[in-house]
Amino acid sequence: MSISREDVEYVAALARLELTEQETQEYTEQLNSILGYAAMLERLDTTDVLPTAHAVPLHNVLREDQVRPSINHEKALKNAPDEEEGFFRVPKISLT
Amino acid sequence: MVVANKYEMVCGLEVHVELQTKTKIFCSCTTEFGGEQNTHVCPVCLGMPGTLPVLNREVVNYAIKAGLALNCEIAEFSKFDRKNYFYPDLSKNYQTSQFDLPICGKGGLEIEVEGEKKWVGITRAHMEEDAGKLVHSGDTITTSNESSVDYNRAGVPLLEIVSEPDMRSIPEVLAYLEKLVQILEYTEVSDCRLEQGSVRFDINVSLRPMGATTLGTRTETKNLNSFSSVRRCMEYEIARQSRVLDAGEKVIQETRTWDEGQGVTLTLRSKEEAHDYRYFPEPDLAPLVIDREWVERIRKMLPELPEARRVRLQALGLSAYDTGVITQSKALSDFFDEALSSYGDAKTLANWVMGDVTRLLNTNQCNVVDSPISAPQLAELLGLIDKGTISGKIAKSVLEDMYSTGKDAEVIVKEKGLAQISDEGALLGIIDDVISANPQSVEDFRAGKDRAIGFLVGQIMKATKGQANPGLVNKLLKEKLS
Image (cartoon, rainbow over all chains, first blue to last red; front, side):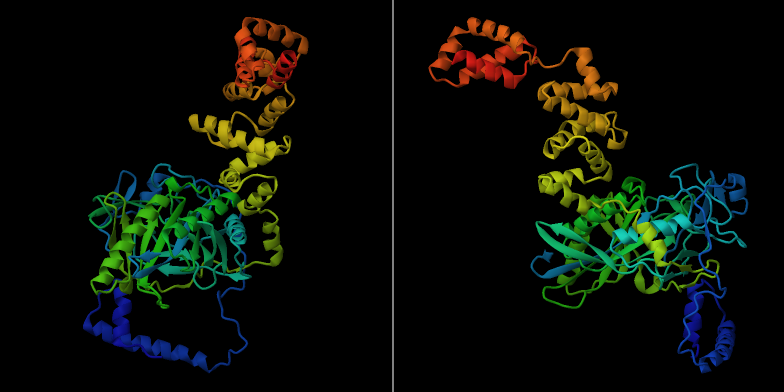
């Protein structure tokens, strides 16, 4: 598997990243190198191995349905870049 | 559905149901509707760095329960995934949802439209978190400049139920939705308050030439929350797509939004650009292993579902219409069943429940669960009619008094002296008086005019303020006159 420039541009667009020409070039090489390294795993025989859904061998970590106090208004909005009347304020929403 | 005899409509639905747990899916904040903005929040549902979500057990129980009621396979192994997108209704830039291993697999339900039965398949149902609410400063989502966000709803548990593209007409779609909501209401996994957005519908619609076997390009219209919006939106979208196809153009695959005020659908985003959600397994949540013992435990908690109730009530002699009305809501159906356990005449009971009782509740805008007249009290009232203590007519006024006072029928009958006069001696005296006061009617009756007896009975009822036992009056009067 190899990563093309177009792949890098596509992923950058999805992540809302603006890359320079040089960065695009650099990341294409780096990502290819990383994936090339990980490709070593393909040499293993995984015929009888179930796909891994989680790295930690735990399941059914559940809590009971009991209400606990929420945090107060001030705390909730403390890190908000902008707020108004207890709401978080966000700029115009671009959907595409 | 045949659109101008040229196109066939194909529709599949995604239905989002808020599960009525006390707390959110991954944190212990309350799920209570409303509340001052951003007060039902904590570091977990605000997506603060370094927090860890923990799954609410009740969400899993409800998802299994709904899945069983919808005839779905319940997965033995299930996990959560991150659905990545940039939109401030969730603060994490992803929604915790389920991708390839949802909790509920294939299922479905049977609908009936104009006497035709049809199976509508369910592809899957999965658990996910609800998003926050955005208040836009402009008129609509497409024209706003700034938005205010309230995260109280962020993290409320949802079950998303995805149907197969099995529906071919608007009535089929509405029948499916009504049945689905009814089943969910019966299982009590959701309060199903459509007006509060507890249930929301996404509609996938495409057209194809009649006889075609491949699907046409579809649009998805999101976030409808009433059956009437669904109907109007579909009428609009079908007309719009057929105009596009008639003009020889292609329908664009996209997400659209329904503008209730204008009655139109508008482009929200095109699918090609926005659909790459880059799902990956949620590393912060351990997977679920659901053993069959767990599933069976939940199955035992399922109530008798509407279909089974209809069959049972029809076997008692009720019409399809009556059983449909009574089983419309679980609350009314439960009320009926409770009364039926102490009053055996199902047909009479049905008439009272659907007639006077429902009318009183509607007039007072009262839900049947809050009815001041309990089911056993209604059964007792009907018993008094059968015993001849009161007439059906008097019973109606007793019912009104029961509603306003909450008293038992027998108490009201005693207090107001409403018991029927079934004492022959007392009635005979009155009958004699009426006969001597109305010689013309007596003569008419003897001359063969049957209607005359009705007049005489009426006079006797009047003289007793409606309390004479009508059957007994008829019998005694006929004996006197023959």
